[in-house]
Image 1 (spheres, helix red, strand yellow):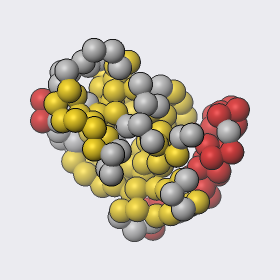
Image 2: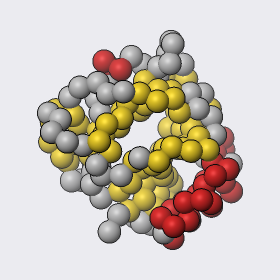
Image 3: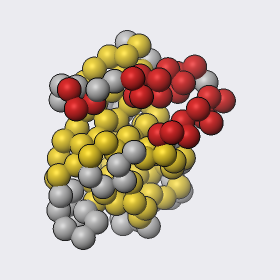
Length: 150
């Protein structure tokens, strides 16, 4: 996992063209005007999912992991706690769905704060649970860039 502020995104150019392209798109797009749901950036290689939701207690969600895509989660309104743990032998709650590219896991993990202007990159061994409330439920807006791995 990588956690940083958007102004530091050029430091991650070493991750490759897709990440550089994703960060360029992120910084050049009016996210407030972006429609909800999926927006293709580079076909199935990079796409964005614009989300607006209310945060909730950790017990109301489940940690997840992906295999085909990395998540670049960028918070542009509000803040949330995100559960995180390296994938080891955690118990599977829902088996991997190859079409939706995720599996769900059981348990609660240590959390970190994702604030406005920050991003987190989650790779396949990064179990993550976004959307956890800080002190009370609040509305947030976040874009998740799906970056194809190969």
